[in-house]
Image 1: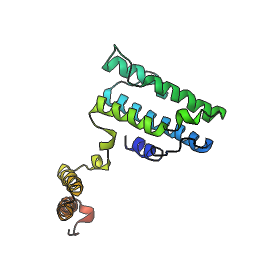
Image 2: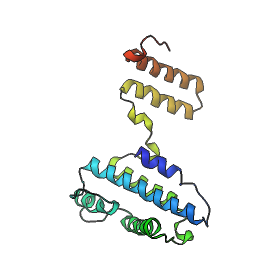
Image 3: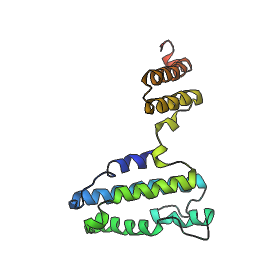
Length: 181
């Protein structure tokens, strides 16, 4: 999810209503790659992997549907089917779509993927950050407290929370033993 978010951040705010073909192609391929990363992560999390060995973006929709809501397709499946076709045209055939139809692909895909993340794992894509990789729960708690404090413009308290987290991190890590915060 972090990688998908990072990819989308590179195209999400390209706001030209009439992008050149290179920009448009980059946006389409990047948006598709991000979508594939997210749907694969969701399928893995849900235990809804496609049966075959090689998986493509459209292969994930049916297993997730079957596992989570057999009565209806995944949200925006039609859009991603179109995106997949457009990506094939751009990447393999050198055929570019109408820029007016796809100029906001990054923003659109981000919105759809954000909905998937909320629906299937209860976390918004906006809420996904590197703090999830902090293994020590107490350190992660101090980091998250610091994030909340910085949004409240409580900078002294922010630095104090970070210092507490670093102190715990350094005191528990033999590789940096002896460092003082």
